[in-house]
Structure formats: structure tokens, C-alpha cells
Image (cartoon, rainbow, N blue to C red; front, side, top):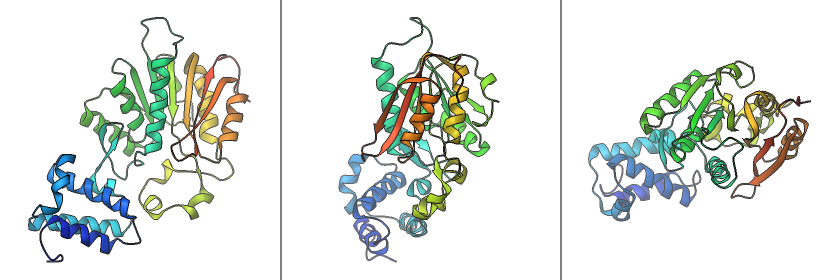
Length: 304
């Protein structure tokens, strides 16, 4: 046996020794907790007494295999095959980016605005929401979970990611509509039947030049097409989505983006060139420029 006893406390010590330098103590606590809950289909309250739990041989092998994968920089969410996002448990693997806390903050902002700001549509009109570059479907599904009467569309170009969205629809039992389309072309504009109250996108926005400062667990496992843009045109998705939103967003509707922390001034300039108003930037909980929105007042004004 690779640990001195079959109690979970031995696994905790084993992970601390074997993964020192790769993960912080806090990261290891989180990883072990989620592995424990997954393996034993347990509740968070069960984890309080986890140290005394005796493990079977197959349990021990599960934790050893997970450790081997962690040592190769594989994200623990991919090892689990799932991730939590805005109160939902979603399937999660190499087909799409891992849902992140800062994207939960974007969802929070949208919900806060919908619930507190008057809508331009007539009373009783449906709330239509479009999520572009949907990935795992996390934004669309989170919004649908909180706004059950809304009509939510998710647009995704990757066929693998689109299949993951379908699986997450079934997994969460939430009904959203999916569209296979490229965010950089016009093909989705004619597929969206109604004007949208809200359009949101967390598009690829990391310049290729940033590769050298990124962690191996991102570079080696998460899909490149969802991460990177060319160095000479890092705003391509923002610009093209803004242009197309002019024809499918309601007058006074909102366009929301998750953004690169270094590109906030450039994204704001694009909003201004497209004649959006009430442009607002928000920082994430880490103090980084992370979200921006603008309101459309004149759909006839062409973007420059």
C-alpha cells in the first residue's frame, strides 16, 4: 500500500507531500474536498469527519490515479468530470473551458440589472437572452436557472462544445436553445428569431503572446480555440459581435462582455464607435478590469 493506513487522513498527507510546490495548501484543500465528495457521493457536511473514513482498495486507487493526473497539470475539474457554477453542477471536460468565478460575477451583474432596471419591452413581453461563444453553456444555463420564463439561446462554433452544452441541458434539466454558428460571421443573425433583451459573450480574448505567462494546466488541457486570438487583432470577437448585435438587440437592450484586463480601454472605444451608451466597466473580486456593458439606442448607426 502506498500510504501507511487506509484512513483518509493518510491520503491528505500523501497529497501534501506529493504535490508540494505544484499547488498551494488552500488549493489542495479544495481539490481533496471535491474528490472526496465525488468519490463517495457525499454532502459537504460529511467532509467534516473525512479524516477517519476508511477507504477500500479501489478508493485508494481512485485517489492515487487522481494524484498522478494532477502531477501532469490536469485540472481537477476535468478529473472530476464536473464543475460547480452559479449553484449548478455542470459536466466539464476538454471540450470547453472550465467555468470560472469571474464569469459567475458577470452572470450576477446581468441578473442584478434585469431585476432592478426597467425594461424597454412592453409589460408581459418575453425576456430574450443570447449567449455567444457559449462553451460549456455555463452562462446560458445559469441565467435560465434564475430566469425560468426567459428564452435563452446559446451560440457555439465548436461541435464538441455544442455537444457538451446539450449534455449539460439534460444534466441540469434546463431548457435553452442551441445554435451551431460562428461568432465571426453573419450566419447566426438570421437564426435568431426575435430581438434580444440581453446579449452576453465571454469570447476568446487572450493574445497569443500571453502564452509564456500562462499556467500549464490551462495551456496543456483547455481548448485553444476558446482562449486565444491573434496578437495583431485581439479585439476581433468584440468588434464582430458588436456589429451583429445592432440587428438583433432590442432598442435600449444591453450587450455584456467578459474582457481581458488589459483591453478595457480598447473595448470601451469599440462600444463608443458603435454608438452604444451608458458604457460601464466593472472589476472582478481580484480588482481586475473584467466586465463591460453598453446599451444600444440607435440600431441604424453603423459601427466604424
